[in-house]
Amino acid sequence: MRDLFNIADSLYAATYLQQARLTYERIVFSLQTSGLPADSLQKLKNEALLKKTYTYKAEALYKEALQAIERTDANNLPEAEGFVLRYETSLCAYLAGNYNEAYNYILQLKYFIKDTTLTNQVDFLEILTLNELQRWEEAKKLTAVYIQKNNLQANVDELYGFLKNPRIRKPEKAILLSTFLPGVGQWYAGYPFRGMVSATLQLACFTFGAYSIWQRYYLSGFFTGFVLLQAFYSGGIRHTGYLVEKKNKEKIERYNGTVREFIIESESKKAIK
Image (cartoon, rainbow, N blue to C red; front, top):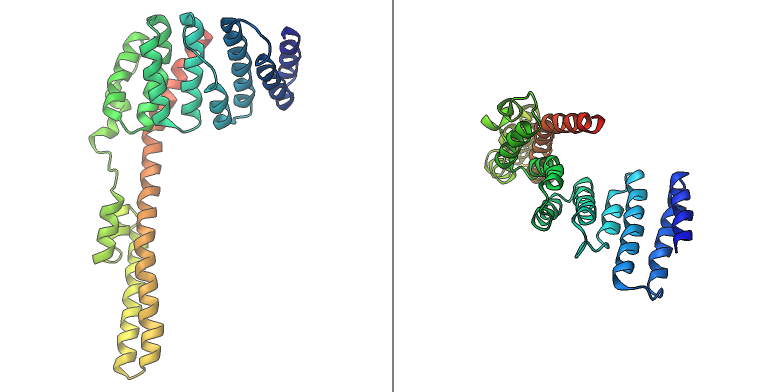
């Protein structure tokens, strides 16, 4: 079995990542019929799956990495070994964009691992995860503690200055506004020019349709004017929801990006030390 590990490790070191993955998976498969004691089986399987996870991370395949690390068993292990598996699971979930899942894994880690020298190492990840979940008040409190623990020169109120006026829009409100006041929803979403264009087009279609019918051009008034009006009207409502979500994502990324940059820089300096 150790010979297979040596082959897989050599492939990984040479960046033959797919071949390394296949070899690590071969080890996992072979362990099923190895007849080894349960504790030895668990240890070797965890090692193979952890290293397989690293091959996925090396290619930024974070969803696949998460699937691999979730197959490990961190139960009844020494704290240091259990921490590595639980930390990697939390990190992969975060990198895969599964922020609720990542936060749950972090909570599990802090529950099962009692050594604070280990749990302190995941503080940065908890902050980043809470930010992505838009639980900014909780993240701010943890960031203040993080700054104090690490003796950093930073002002948490400045990092989270956006909390004074986050201006996150509600898609349902924007849609409601567009339903009764065409163009106003786009204006509320932060796109006033698009709102004016939408309102102008809808008004033009209505005016053309009404004028055509007044002039007794019933078919052209209905099919050209009011059908186009309906298309612009319903399309404007749908587009309003998209615009709100787009603008919100831009704001959230800008807010979180400031804190993320600070945290990553701090962790990088710690790694150098």
